[in-house]
Image (cartoon, rainbow, N blue to C red; front, side, top):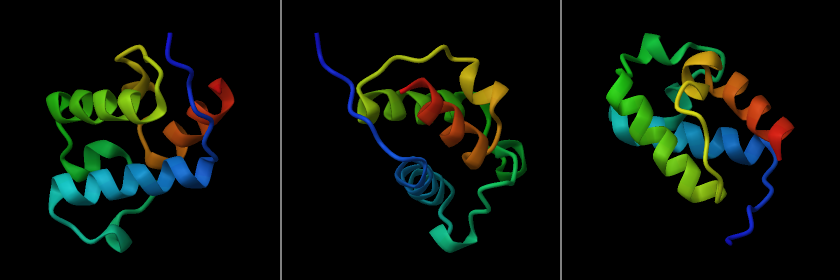
Length: 84
């Protein structure tokens, strides 16, 4: 079984910002970590793709509702650090 890797909140936030910026064709500096994902027009299929990439990157599986229960970069990163 693969062992999960531990990342800091800042590392997770930076990864999420890069992924969002790439997917939305924005500059990473334009992503606000407190802005809800919905405000970036991230639909549910895009959110699940993002979560799938996050699972691979962190080496862990998550409940798909996680990204909806923690709907901003900062909230999601905080939650993921608490779980590690």
